[in-house]
Length: 427
Ligand code: AMP
Image (cartoon, rainbow, N blue to C red; front, side, top):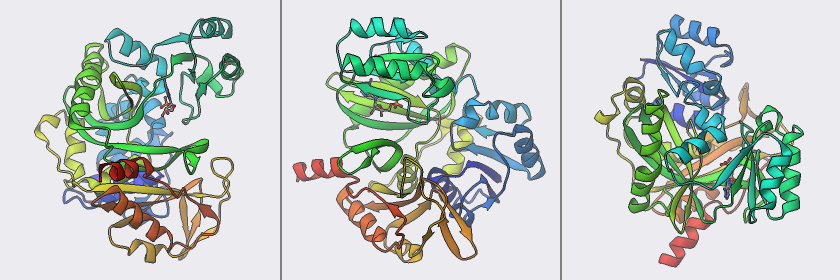
């Protein structure tokens, strides 16, 4: 079958790399793709925002499945429009994509169905939010309701900080996303990401991961889209996965179905593992980036039949096999990221780095110019490895990175430290 993948990041390169190994695949297209994706897919210059153009491309090229990488096209209703046109699309309809598009929608659903999450209230005026803040214990978390590219969450240690955060949301710091806000209880614990495929009723758990959001070593500096990740997350023991399924994922999917907004697609739950157990921080309606990179190198089975079964409602017939090894990815970013990254710098040594045993290099923001690879975004490369332990995967990743000649970029030097600390403690 022919497949169209939507997106241009490292997540999409990892998905394209995995899909390209499927015996079911005829042609793989990617819109718009990037310099690395071009090695495994035909990159096409259509915009995901132009639903009519995507539909026309699918009809002209006999696309059997569209896979949407990022959230924005789903929130804009691309899956609805493709489905109406008779084209299969992996990803939820616009109504169900509200699980990511509106934090308030998800929190209200959690409250109604008694899904464990931080206590919260929703506000559409600063005065009401500030009155709530004055009556609650600190720290508090102030969040813009809508999509804010991971930036609309402010953890506040003082009332003053919380009030400033409220004012900045309502004065447009996050655009329309901040027209409504939430003020939440601060959850203490260890974070983990849990991934599943959902076909409306059945849930197939995938794997767990942990990511690194801060730009600097030791989890310092501003938040980013993600500077690295590893899988599995040691905190997600079989017992914790069972609790997550029973207390969070299964009730959510049942609630969505009961509301007439069934969820179909990839479900990514951001969790805080607290002393009382798993609590939901947020949902995303797609794979994480860079979490997809570590998931894809651990997945042994063919991905394509599982994604098709997700769309067809036959997930209960699918079982997936995973490698027991750990996987780790380090993000290489352009100087200046997460502010204004310096683009156009040349990257050399990629072939030598990719030749390191157990290493896959996924491109996140590159373009090809003749034989040269140039940086074209903030996050640029994902050096992704497997190993018998996180320590082995980490050593491989940094050995490969040492072979990359790119004076215009940087990476964190401590990806995996949490898991290493556990491995050391357990040794
Ligand atoms: P979100 O975009 O909702 O995932 O939030 C981004 C990050 O903010 C999360 O990954 C957490 O590190 C942190 N965060 C969000 N909500 C809370 C909370 N209620 N308690 C503690 N940390 C939080």
